[in-house]
Length: 598
Image 1 (tube, rainbow, N blue to C red):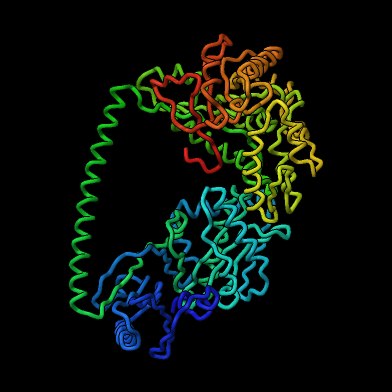
Image 2: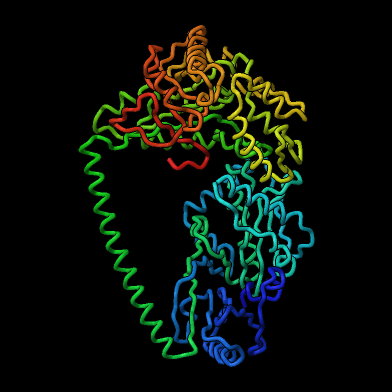
């Protein structure tokens, strides 16, 4: 029997169903108009069971159609219309854990061993707990929260549902890691007959470098084998880690059975014609798409617009901080990951300085390049990034907002984060309020408040922030004092042959919302002049924030038309730089994170 056919499942999720008893087993179904829906969902329906279900349901219910939803093709015995409904990933478990680990790919085994050694090296002792008698909701809610955070950080909503806790208590368990009395990773599963169903897997984003999500999954698989479980069902959804752990994708089918034999014949003919049409359409589309790609490549080569490389935008390089909200934590690349990224780039690309991008793109027949840039001037650029770039002998650029090292500006995004982490609700003077009880709510509040702050009067930003947050005492200057480089560090970096210091305005305003072009001009000029006063002549510039919401043609035209010595300028919008790129003062950059595939 499938977990989706158990009494606990139907009671928990409140499905309106009926039950029929066949061979001492209950089978649940629902009636929708003239259709009878049997939620098979990987249940093993033998030929005898299917025949009895068909006979009894047509006798009992006034329906014309029975639909068995969700089982493997080989389990279909009765003539009917068979259609693919979804994909389900299933791992057939061997009798011993050693046999399973040996079946994994060589790289997977090496990576898992390496992550365990890193945990030992950093003296992080994870406590493994497997609870199959769940009584408290706390751990479940923590894993649910971590899953939501990870999905949110990747840009999509989690499919996890809190209702599963009741099914877990009756027919399941939780495997999780604790460290310093904190849940760092976990798997939520149910057990039914000889199958373990994996419903949720998650880990703390702050421990990405140890890949503890894969480690807790491996421990869950070891537990399943020890309990003589024959099958681990990862359920539906395409994920790379499922294949890495040897799960095989099985199509789940919908079998539609008709009361009338004539109706079945007619629908079968319709289905075959439809499949033929889809196949023909797909083949024609593939042929045209292939031809279009070839024509596009030929056109690009003839016009000289073949992408030549990528300029990467970073902000910080520092170790993980599990207390940080992901919008700020996502601005970091962890030192060990940056080290691997640079090692890879050195092997596969020409690593150049951002100031050389324009001249490089004009040269024909060179392999693709990468260039690395950091915005704002954080202290960790000096402490962590500089030694790593020197190790690999790769140049990089730091765009410095000149008011930050003078410690007279504000990094409001970190002050906002500190406030959100300390309260359960934020009330703004404009009448809006945000619940901040969970980490997910804090992240959502951060993003919404960030949008509001970027629209404020940039010339009076601190005053307006104090008015907006009048109910709170916030030290807006604390982050810039703690996080930004001082001028001694910047001057020392500027002496390094691998380092280019670029302009980033003086005040780090959202330039687009400034009311007067004169204010824009003065702030850009002042930033360049302050750099010169410290012996730094720059010919390269990056716009603060840098997307279309913060940069307009007004700022781009100003740099283009004025003799400031700036040879090129960079946005924060993604894209490749090409040989014939004419936007010399609006060059694209790609955001580099811990997850970026180079």
